[in-house]
Length: 139
Image 1 (cartoon, rainbow, N blue to C red):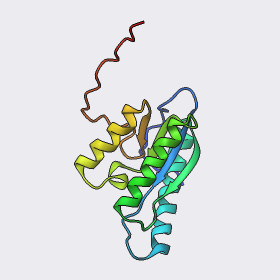
Image 2: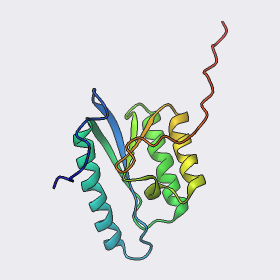
Image 3: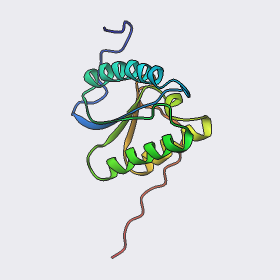
């Protein structure tokens, strides 16, 4: 099912390996959480196919609480630091964070590690995050 009104221009010219992070706000019913994550996965797959991204691994948070979902996020970042992916894809920032401060934190963690964050709704969120210039190593 194609979504009308979406940009046809791709974000990337070269293929980029990515990690997909799915999350639901469901706390009790694990079957409902799985259905919501499957809907998110359909939207993410459509986005990934259109924008030249290659999903390498899919992380699901299910009905887990904040602590476990933050651990899953850190696991995804460590997976990228191991050199297996270069970007993180989610449906939107609200799906992977618990507020504005947490959204800035998670975007900052991904960018500080040297990777990119894409969302289906916002494409590549451009939050005002200061990135200091890299220091030249003295020999």
